Image (tube, rainbow, N blue to C red; front, side):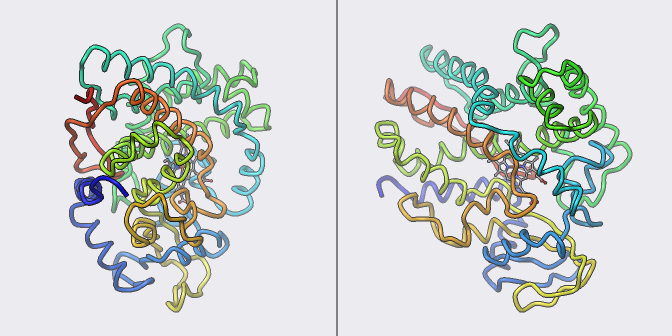
Length: 395
Ligand code: HEM
Protein backbone atom coordinates (compact mmCIF):
# COMPACT_ATOMS: atom_id res chain seq x y z
CA UNK A 1 0.00 0.00 0.00
CA UNK A 2 1.21 3.49 -0.83
CA UNK A 3 0.89 6.65 1.21
CA UNK A 4 0.42 6.99 4.93
CA UNK A 5 -2.19 4.73 6.45
CA UNK A 6 -1.57 6.35 9.81
CA UNK A 7 -2.70 9.77 8.54
CA UNK A 8 -5.94 8.17 7.35
CA UNK A 9 -6.41 6.40 10.66
CA UNK A 10 -5.71 9.58 12.59
CA UNK A 11 -8.27 11.58 10.65
CA UNK A 12 -10.91 8.89 10.95
CA UNK A 13 -10.35 8.76 14.69
CA UNK A 14 -10.72 12.54 14.91
CA UNK A 15 -13.99 12.29 12.99
CA UNK A 16 -15.33 9.68 15.43
CA UNK A 17 -14.11 11.57 18.50
CA UNK A 18 -15.51 14.88 17.22
CA UNK A 19 -18.99 13.34 17.29
CA UNK A 20 -18.63 11.15 20.38
CA UNK A 21 -15.60 12.09 22.49
CA UNK A 22 -16.58 9.83 25.40
CA UNK A 23 -18.82 7.23 23.83
CA UNK A 24 -16.60 6.24 20.91
CA UNK A 25 -13.56 5.20 23.01
CA UNK A 26 -15.93 3.58 25.52
CA UNK A 27 -17.77 1.52 22.90
CA UNK A 28 -14.49 0.44 21.31
CA UNK A 29 -12.88 -0.58 24.59
CA UNK A 30 -16.02 -2.37 25.84
CA UNK A 31 -16.21 -4.17 22.50
CA UNK A 32 -12.69 -5.44 23.04
CA UNK A 33 -13.72 -6.88 26.43
CA UNK A 34 -16.24 -9.34 24.99
CA UNK A 35 -18.79 -9.96 22.23
CA UNK A 36 -21.85 -9.43 24.47
CA UNK A 37 -21.82 -7.30 27.63
CA UNK A 38 -24.68 -6.27 29.87
CA UNK A 39 -24.30 -2.58 30.77
CA UNK A 40 -26.51 -1.81 33.77
CA UNK A 41 -29.01 0.94 32.99
CA UNK A 42 -28.06 1.07 29.30
CA UNK A 43 -28.74 -2.32 27.77
CA UNK A 44 -26.87 -5.23 26.25
CA UNK A 45 -23.97 -4.27 24.01
CA UNK A 46 -23.27 -6.62 21.08
CA UNK A 47 -19.91 -6.00 19.39
CA UNK A 48 -19.13 -9.04 17.24
CA UNK A 49 -20.19 -9.10 13.58
CA UNK A 50 -21.83 -12.54 13.38
CA UNK A 51 -23.83 -11.90 16.58
CA UNK A 52 -24.90 -8.44 15.35
CA UNK A 53 -26.10 -10.13 12.17
CA UNK A 54 -27.98 -12.86 14.13
CA UNK A 55 -29.92 -10.21 16.07
CA UNK A 56 -30.73 -8.23 12.91
CA UNK A 57 -31.92 -11.35 11.09
CA UNK A 58 -34.28 -12.36 13.89
CA UNK A 59 -37.17 -9.91 13.61
CA UNK A 60 -39.40 -12.16 15.74
CA UNK A 61 -37.31 -11.93 18.92
CA UNK A 62 -35.68 -8.52 18.41
CA UNK A 63 -37.84 -5.60 17.30
CA UNK A 64 -37.07 -2.09 16.19
CA UNK A 65 -40.31 -0.43 17.27
CA UNK A 66 -40.02 -1.34 20.97
CA UNK A 67 -40.10 1.07 23.90
CA UNK A 68 -36.38 1.94 23.79
CA UNK A 69 -35.30 0.87 20.30
CA UNK A 70 -35.72 4.27 18.60
CA UNK A 71 -38.13 3.29 15.82
CA UNK A 72 -41.12 4.69 17.72
CA UNK A 73 -39.34 8.00 18.17
CA UNK A 74 -40.40 8.85 14.64
CA UNK A 75 -44.08 8.02 14.82
CA UNK A 76 -45.29 11.46 16.02
CA UNK A 77 -43.32 13.07 13.18
CA UNK A 78 -43.85 10.81 10.17
CA UNK A 79 -46.86 8.68 11.13
CA UNK A 80 -46.99 4.98 11.99
CA UNK A 81 -46.13 3.47 8.58
CA UNK A 82 -42.60 4.68 7.83
CA UNK A 83 -40.69 1.35 7.73
CA UNK A 84 -38.24 2.42 10.46
CA UNK A 85 -41.03 2.24 13.04
CA UNK A 86 -42.65 -1.00 11.85
CA UNK A 87 -42.05 -4.67 12.57
CA UNK A 88 -43.50 -8.10 11.81
CA UNK A 89 -46.16 -8.82 9.21
CA UNK A 90 -47.06 -5.19 8.39
CA UNK A 91 -43.42 -4.31 7.82
CA UNK A 92 -42.80 -7.43 5.73
CA UNK A 93 -45.80 -6.69 3.51
CA UNK A 94 -44.77 -3.10 2.94
CA UNK A 95 -41.20 -4.14 2.13
CA UNK A 96 -42.54 -6.76 -0.28
CA UNK A 97 -44.53 -4.11 -2.15
CA UNK A 98 -41.38 -2.00 -2.34
CA UNK A 99 -39.12 -4.80 -3.56
CA UNK A 100 -38.89 -3.43 -7.11
CA UNK A 101 -38.81 0.22 -6.10
CA UNK A 102 -35.29 0.88 -7.33
CA UNK A 103 -34.23 -0.32 -10.74
CA UNK A 104 -30.85 0.78 -12.12
CA UNK A 105 -32.75 3.06 -14.55
CA UNK A 106 -34.96 4.69 -11.89
CA UNK A 107 -31.99 5.27 -9.60
CA UNK A 108 -29.91 6.81 -12.39
CA UNK A 109 -32.77 9.16 -13.31
CA UNK A 110 -33.06 10.31 -9.70
CA UNK A 111 -29.35 11.04 -9.33
CA UNK A 112 -28.39 12.39 -12.77
CA UNK A 113 -29.65 16.01 -12.51
CA UNK A 114 -28.03 16.44 -9.09
CA UNK A 115 -24.82 14.84 -10.41
CA UNK A 116 -24.67 17.40 -13.21
CA UNK A 117 -24.97 20.27 -10.73
CA UNK A 118 -22.33 18.64 -8.51
CA UNK A 119 -20.02 18.34 -11.51
CA UNK A 120 -20.47 21.93 -12.57
CA UNK A 121 -19.92 23.25 -9.03
CA UNK A 122 -16.70 21.24 -8.59
CA UNK A 123 -15.39 22.11 -12.06
CA UNK A 124 -16.32 25.75 -11.85
CA UNK A 125 -14.74 26.20 -8.42
CA UNK A 126 -11.49 24.44 -9.27
CA UNK A 127 -11.25 26.03 -12.74
CA UNK A 128 -11.38 29.40 -11.02
CA UNK A 129 -8.65 28.43 -8.60
CA UNK A 130 -11.06 28.47 -5.66
CA UNK A 131 -11.30 25.97 -2.84
CA UNK A 132 -14.34 23.73 -3.11
CA UNK A 133 -15.99 22.46 0.06
CA UNK A 134 -16.85 18.85 -0.70
CA UNK A 135 -19.18 18.54 2.31
CA UNK A 136 -21.32 21.39 1.04
CA UNK A 137 -21.32 19.95 -2.48
CA UNK A 138 -22.52 16.57 -1.17
CA UNK A 139 -25.25 18.31 0.84
CA UNK A 140 -26.49 19.84 -2.41
CA UNK A 141 -26.25 16.50 -4.16
CA UNK A 142 -28.37 14.93 -1.41
CA UNK A 143 -30.80 17.87 -1.59
CA UNK A 144 -31.13 17.37 -5.35
CA UNK A 145 -32.03 13.72 -4.78
CA UNK A 146 -34.57 14.77 -2.12
CA UNK A 147 -36.29 16.91 -4.77
CA UNK A 148 -36.68 13.76 -6.89
CA UNK A 149 -37.99 11.79 -3.91
CA UNK A 150 -40.64 14.48 -3.55
CA UNK A 151 -41.43 14.29 -7.25
CA UNK A 152 -40.38 17.91 -7.86
CA UNK A 153 -38.83 18.63 -11.24
CA UNK A 154 -35.93 21.06 -11.54
CA UNK A 155 -37.96 23.74 -13.32
CA UNK A 156 -41.04 23.47 -11.08
CA UNK A 157 -42.26 26.92 -9.94
CA UNK A 158 -41.30 27.64 -6.32
CA UNK A 159 -38.93 24.69 -6.17
CA UNK A 160 -36.69 25.05 -3.11
CA UNK A 161 -32.92 25.15 -3.76
CA UNK A 162 -31.05 21.87 -3.16
CA UNK A 163 -29.35 23.25 -0.07
CA UNK A 164 -32.69 24.22 1.53
CA UNK A 165 -34.07 20.77 0.79
CA UNK A 166 -31.05 19.21 2.45
CA UNK A 167 -31.50 21.51 5.48
CA UNK A 168 -35.13 20.48 5.80
CA UNK A 169 -34.21 16.78 5.72
CA UNK A 170 -31.43 17.38 8.17
CA UNK A 171 -33.69 19.31 10.55
CA UNK A 172 -35.81 16.15 10.86
CA UNK A 173 -32.98 13.64 11.29
CA UNK A 174 -31.10 15.85 13.75
CA UNK A 175 -33.98 15.50 16.20
CA UNK A 176 -32.46 12.13 17.11
CA UNK A 177 -29.88 12.33 19.86
CA UNK A 178 -28.22 9.59 21.80
CA UNK A 179 -30.04 8.90 25.03
CA UNK A 180 -33.22 10.65 23.82
CA UNK A 181 -35.91 7.97 24.25
CA UNK A 182 -38.75 10.11 22.84
CA UNK A 183 -39.34 13.55 21.39
CA UNK A 184 -40.80 16.39 23.46
CA UNK A 185 -44.05 17.85 22.05
CA UNK A 186 -42.01 20.86 20.81
CA UNK A 187 -39.47 18.67 18.98
CA UNK A 188 -42.24 16.56 17.46
CA UNK A 189 -44.02 19.73 16.29
CA UNK A 190 -40.77 21.02 14.74
CA UNK A 191 -40.29 17.71 12.92
CA UNK A 192 -43.91 17.68 11.73
CA UNK A 193 -43.57 21.23 10.41
CA UNK A 194 -40.56 20.19 8.30
CA UNK A 195 -42.37 17.06 7.08
CA UNK A 196 -45.40 19.17 6.12
CA UNK A 197 -43.22 21.47 4.01
CA UNK A 198 -41.87 18.43 2.19
CA UNK A 199 -45.29 16.77 2.02
CA UNK A 200 -46.95 19.50 -0.09
CA UNK A 201 -45.13 18.71 -3.36
CA UNK A 202 -45.06 14.97 -2.61
CA UNK A 203 -48.86 14.89 -2.24
CA UNK A 204 -49.24 16.84 -5.49
CA UNK A 205 -46.98 14.37 -7.32
CA UNK A 206 -48.87 11.43 -5.76
CA UNK A 207 -52.16 12.81 -7.10
CA UNK A 208 -50.49 13.56 -10.44
CA UNK A 209 -50.32 9.76 -10.74
CA UNK A 210 -47.27 9.78 -13.04
CA UNK A 211 -45.13 6.69 -12.33
CA UNK A 212 -42.12 8.62 -13.67
CA UNK A 213 -42.13 10.56 -10.37
CA UNK A 214 -41.14 8.81 -7.14
CA UNK A 215 -44.48 9.49 -5.34
CA UNK A 216 -46.31 8.37 -8.51
CA UNK A 217 -44.23 5.20 -8.56
CA UNK A 218 -45.14 4.49 -4.93
CA UNK A 219 -48.79 4.90 -5.91
CA UNK A 220 -48.40 2.49 -8.82
CA UNK A 221 -46.90 -0.05 -6.38
CA UNK A 222 -50.13 0.07 -4.37
CA UNK A 223 -49.25 2.54 -1.60
CA UNK A 224 -51.91 4.71 -0.04
CA UNK A 225 -51.15 8.42 0.13
CA UNK A 226 -50.23 8.20 3.82
CA UNK A 227 -47.96 5.19 3.24
CA UNK A 228 -46.23 7.01 0.39
CA UNK A 229 -45.66 10.09 2.57
CA UNK A 230 -44.34 7.96 5.44
CA UNK A 231 -41.91 6.22 3.13
CA UNK A 232 -40.75 9.44 1.49
CA UNK A 233 -40.21 11.04 4.91
CA UNK A 234 -38.23 7.98 6.04
CA UNK A 235 -36.04 8.19 2.95
CA UNK A 236 -35.40 11.88 3.44
CA UNK A 237 -34.49 11.60 7.11
CA UNK A 238 -32.51 8.35 7.03
CA UNK A 239 -30.71 8.82 3.73
CA UNK A 240 -29.24 12.29 3.86
CA UNK A 241 -26.93 12.41 6.88
CA UNK A 242 -25.32 9.03 6.22
CA UNK A 243 -24.43 10.07 2.71
CA UNK A 244 -23.05 13.46 3.70
CA UNK A 245 -21.02 11.68 6.38
CA UNK A 246 -19.69 9.03 4.04
CA UNK A 247 -18.68 10.65 0.74
CA UNK A 248 -16.17 13.16 2.20
CA UNK A 249 -14.73 10.47 4.49
CA UNK A 250 -14.36 8.12 1.54
CA UNK A 251 -12.55 10.79 -0.48
CA UNK A 252 -10.34 11.68 2.51
CA UNK A 253 -9.47 8.02 3.11
CA UNK A 254 -8.55 7.42 -0.52
CA UNK A 255 -6.50 10.60 -0.61
CA UNK A 256 -4.79 10.02 2.75
CA UNK A 257 -3.76 6.51 1.68
CA UNK A 258 -2.42 7.77 -1.66
CA UNK A 259 -4.91 5.82 -3.79
CA UNK A 260 -6.65 8.57 -5.74
CA UNK A 261 -4.24 8.69 -8.66
CA UNK A 262 -4.31 4.93 -9.34
CA UNK A 263 -8.11 4.76 -8.98
CA UNK A 264 -8.58 7.74 -11.30
CA UNK A 265 -6.59 5.94 -14.00
CA UNK A 266 -8.11 2.50 -13.47
CA UNK A 267 -11.62 2.32 -11.95
CA UNK A 268 -11.70 -1.46 -11.64
CA UNK A 269 -10.71 -1.25 -7.98
CA UNK A 270 -13.47 1.23 -7.14
CA UNK A 271 -16.16 -1.17 -5.84
CA UNK A 272 -13.69 -2.77 -3.42
CA UNK A 273 -12.39 0.62 -2.27
CA UNK A 274 -15.92 1.97 -1.63
CA UNK A 275 -16.95 -1.21 0.15
CA UNK A 276 -13.88 -1.17 2.37
CA UNK A 277 -14.39 2.52 3.15
CA UNK A 278 -17.96 1.71 4.23
CA UNK A 279 -16.59 -1.00 6.51
CA UNK A 280 -13.92 1.25 7.92
CA UNK A 281 -16.09 4.35 8.47
CA UNK A 282 -19.43 2.67 9.38
CA UNK A 283 -21.62 5.75 8.68
CA UNK A 284 -24.47 4.24 10.73
CA UNK A 285 -22.41 3.21 13.78
CA UNK A 286 -25.05 1.78 16.11
CA UNK A 287 -28.44 0.08 15.75
CA UNK A 288 -31.00 -0.52 18.49
CA UNK A 289 -33.46 -3.32 19.15
CA UNK A 290 -35.74 -4.47 21.97
CA UNK A 291 -36.05 -8.10 23.09
CA UNK A 292 -39.62 -9.42 22.91
CA UNK A 293 -38.92 -13.13 23.63
CA UNK A 294 -36.57 -14.34 26.40
CA UNK A 295 -33.50 -16.11 25.02
CA UNK A 296 -29.78 -15.58 24.49
CA UNK A 297 -27.34 -13.70 22.30
CA UNK A 298 -24.27 -15.92 22.04
CA UNK A 299 -23.76 -17.19 25.58
CA UNK A 300 -25.48 -14.24 27.27
CA UNK A 301 -29.10 -14.55 28.45
CA UNK A 302 -31.42 -11.72 27.42
CA UNK A 303 -34.88 -11.00 28.75
CA UNK A 304 -38.03 -9.49 27.32
CA UNK A 305 -37.75 -5.71 27.50
CA UNK A 306 -33.94 -5.63 27.29
CA UNK A 307 -32.55 -2.95 25.04
CA UNK A 308 -29.93 -4.25 22.61
CA UNK A 309 -27.18 -1.90 21.43
CA UNK A 310 -25.71 -3.28 18.23
CA UNK A 311 -22.22 -1.85 17.91
CA UNK A 312 -21.72 -2.07 14.15
CA UNK A 313 -18.84 0.33 14.54
CA UNK A 314 -16.83 -2.05 16.71
CA UNK A 315 -17.97 -5.17 14.83
CA UNK A 316 -16.70 -3.74 11.54
CA UNK A 317 -13.68 -1.72 12.59
CA UNK A 318 -12.20 -4.38 14.85
CA UNK A 319 -11.64 -6.50 11.73
CA UNK A 320 -8.60 -4.41 10.82
CA UNK A 321 -7.24 -1.24 9.25
CA UNK A 322 -8.39 0.23 5.92
CA UNK A 323 -7.20 -2.11 3.18
CA UNK A 324 -9.25 -2.45 -0.04
CA UNK A 325 -6.93 -5.26 -1.18
CA UNK A 326 -8.26 -7.56 1.54
CA UNK A 327 -11.65 -9.26 1.07
CA UNK A 328 -14.34 -8.43 3.63
CA UNK A 329 -14.76 -11.30 6.12
CA UNK A 330 -18.10 -13.01 5.35
CA UNK A 331 -19.62 -12.30 8.79
CA UNK A 332 -19.25 -8.54 8.20
CA UNK A 333 -20.38 -8.36 4.58
CA UNK A 334 -22.58 -5.26 4.08
CA UNK A 335 -23.29 -5.07 7.81
CA UNK A 336 -22.95 -1.27 7.51
CA UNK A 337 -26.24 -1.38 5.58
CA UNK A 338 -27.81 -3.62 8.23
CA UNK A 339 -29.17 -7.12 7.64
CA UNK A 340 -32.50 -8.94 7.67
CA UNK A 341 -35.93 -7.30 7.54
CA UNK A 342 -34.73 -3.69 8.03
CA UNK A 343 -31.76 -3.93 5.64
CA UNK A 344 -31.17 -0.50 4.06
CA UNK A 345 -33.80 -0.18 1.34
CA UNK A 346 -32.02 2.92 0.04
CA UNK A 347 -28.75 1.11 -0.69
CA UNK A 348 -29.08 1.23 -4.53
CA UNK A 349 -29.77 4.96 -4.34
CA UNK A 350 -26.94 5.51 -1.85
CA UNK A 351 -24.48 3.60 -4.06
CA UNK A 352 -25.56 5.57 -7.13
CA UNK A 353 -24.99 8.87 -5.30
CA UNK A 354 -21.63 7.73 -3.93
CA UNK A 355 -20.41 6.50 -7.32
CA UNK A 356 -21.66 9.61 -9.11
CA UNK A 357 -19.76 11.91 -6.75
CA UNK A 358 -16.61 9.80 -6.82
CA UNK A 359 -16.58 9.53 -10.61
CA UNK A 360 -16.81 13.31 -10.95
CA UNK A 361 -13.88 13.77 -8.56
CA UNK A 362 -11.74 11.09 -10.21
CA UNK A 363 -12.45 12.46 -13.71
CA UNK A 364 -11.41 15.88 -12.50
CA UNK A 365 -8.27 14.43 -10.91
CA UNK A 366 -7.27 12.92 -14.26
CA UNK A 367 -7.65 16.31 -15.93
CA UNK A 368 -5.94 18.21 -13.15
CA UNK A 369 -5.01 16.69 -9.79
CA UNK A 370 -6.52 18.20 -6.65
CA UNK A 371 -5.48 17.98 -3.03
CA UNK A 372 -7.19 18.43 0.34
CA UNK A 373 -5.58 21.58 1.79
CA UNK A 374 -7.89 21.88 4.79
CA UNK A 375 -10.64 20.12 6.65
CA UNK A 376 -12.56 20.28 9.91
CA UNK A 377 -14.43 17.53 11.72
CA UNK A 378 -18.00 18.01 12.99
CA UNK A 379 -18.57 18.15 16.72
CA UNK A 380 -21.67 17.36 18.75
CA UNK A 381 -23.39 15.42 15.96
CA UNK A 382 -25.02 11.99 15.98
CA UNK A 383 -23.50 10.75 12.72
CA UNK A 384 -19.73 11.39 12.68
CA UNK A 385 -18.41 13.31 9.70
CA UNK A 386 -16.50 16.29 8.37
CA UNK A 387 -17.99 19.74 8.75
CA UNK A 388 -15.77 20.97 5.91
CA UNK A 389 -13.37 19.24 3.54
CA UNK A 390 -11.81 21.54 0.99
CA UNK A 391 -10.44 20.53 -2.38
CA UNK A 392 -7.98 22.72 -4.28
CA UNK A 393 -5.88 22.35 -7.40
CA UNK A 394 -2.65 20.49 -6.67
CA UNK A 395 0.68 22.06 -7.44
C1 HEM B 1 -23.90 5.33 3.06
C2 HEM B 1 -25.19 5.50 3.15
C3 HEM B 1 -26.12 4.68 4.01
C4 HEM B 1 -25.87 3.83 5.03
C5 HEM B 1 -24.54 3.44 5.64
C6 HEM B 1 -27.15 3.31 5.49
C7 HEM B 1 -27.31 2.40 6.52
C8 HEM B 1 -28.52 1.87 6.92
C9 HEM B 1 -28.68 0.90 7.97
C10 HEM B 1 -27.57 0.33 8.82
C11 HEM B 1 -30.01 0.60 8.05
C12 HEM B 1 -30.66 -0.43 8.99
C13 HEM B 1 -31.02 0.19 10.33
C14 HEM B 1 -31.56 -0.85 11.30
O1 HEM B 1 -31.70 -2.03 10.98
O2 HEM B 1 -31.84 -0.44 12.44
C15 HEM B 1 -30.70 1.40 7.07
C16 HEM B 1 -32.07 1.40 6.88
C17 HEM B 1 -32.71 2.26 6.02
N1 HEM B 1 -32.11 3.10 5.09
FE1 HEM B 1 -30.12 3.38 4.80
N2 HEM B 1 -28.14 3.86 4.73
C18 HEM B 1 -27.56 4.71 3.81
C19 HEM B 1 -28.19 5.45 2.85
C20 HEM B 1 -29.56 5.48 2.66
C21 HEM B 1 -30.23 6.27 1.65
C22 HEM B 1 -29.53 7.17 0.61
C23 HEM B 1 -31.57 6.06 1.83
C24 HEM B 1 -32.74 6.61 1.06
C25 HEM B 1 -32.71 7.71 0.38
C26 HEM B 1 -31.74 5.15 2.94
C27 HEM B 1 -32.96 4.71 3.42
C28 HEM B 1 -33.11 3.77 4.43
C29 HEM B 1 -34.41 3.37 4.96
C30 HEM B 1 -35.78 3.91 4.52
C31 HEM B 1 -34.16 2.43 5.95
C32 HEM B 1 -35.19 1.72 6.82
C33 HEM B 1 -35.56 0.39 6.20
C34 HEM B 1 -36.53 -0.40 7.09
O3 HEM B 1 -36.61 -0.13 8.29
O4 HEM B 1 -37.19 -1.31 6.55
N3 HEM B 1 -30.49 4.81 3.41
N4 HEM B 1 -29.77 2.17 6.39
